[in-house]
Image (cartoon, rainbow, N blue to C red; front, side, top):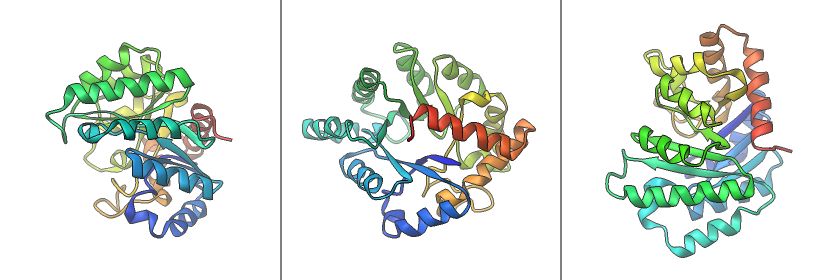
Length: 252
């Protein structure tokens, strides 16, 4: 199993990172991609990737911080992309939930990251919240797009549109929630060759740990929930999501 989005760089996990890595290894999570989103978290993601063979990094500029990024922040991000253990650009994307003001600036920074990813043949890790149509509109202008809709929260109908752009769909803790009809519908329709799994830890812990701190050792709960919705074996979901992650992120 591969956790394609975990924030071991977050203070809640970073202070005891070896414990959380070992917990993940103990349940069969062999690799983890630590996702950055600003200068400090990008630095930590790379630091962890350098320290541990099982960890890879993504570096990005998050939409909710678009208004605070300086030219120095952007230059620092650009310099980090060439690190040998950076396997993706992100989190990047659009967020109209937390930032209702700087939509044009979000789009500018998102587009810059898409163009950079395409010029370097790197996948994108895309964040989207309350901005489905706008996110799709931007991505469509760059199609085909290589990357993943991280912790996808949109509808099954929109998932099909993102898939047609060439993107993967990643599901996390919400697919396990008893009342989460939409993520379960998405799980049913995403083709096996476009499916990824993640924890987004320390956020969005799965049922029965909902509301508590999440970590990569809970990844099997997402896989089991997806297997149930697809009426397939857990091993089948493990096999496909692992191979998809290895291929998309060129994991060595």
